[in-house]
Image 1 (cartoon, helix red, strand yellow):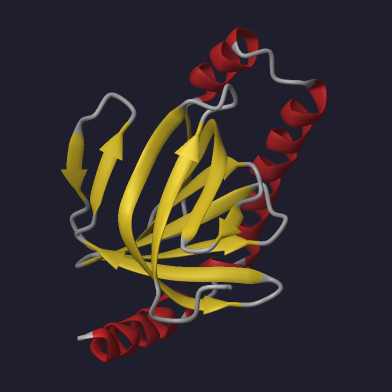
Image 2: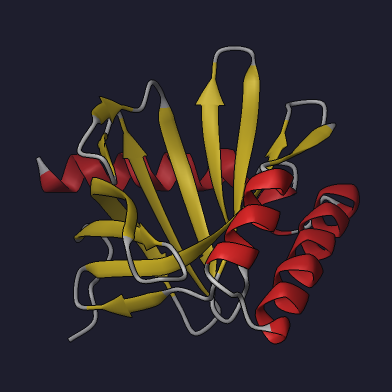
Length: 178
């Protein structure tokens, strides 16, 4: 049975070698369709592969497009919306468990829509260490280009009003839980 809005999801990212990379313990499902899964969290506990734990500092809206090789975390801060875009495999949603493979490259997008590409060296190192197949390297590079194009075109989660609209829905869904 598929989770419904208000369901609590556990999100886990893995590395290509199937080792656990990071997990988020409680993320609230806001919307699911054939095209996308949208969820929200606030001060959620994150556990790293080495067992270190920390909490996020602000509310966030997470967007997972079906079949996409990236996902976005829009962090709502006092000075604007910051995005952290993980380049990774398309996600899998089984019950209340969402997972994907993290392929190292990330894009941090600032409120003014400027951006930084992160972890290129980590991607090169892991692609050699874990022997990423050529099609994976190609998909990762294409996904990076896709994210940058979406930012430039203000598409998907980068559209004006997108994060605010889903954050309002998240707050309503959370109220229904309480």
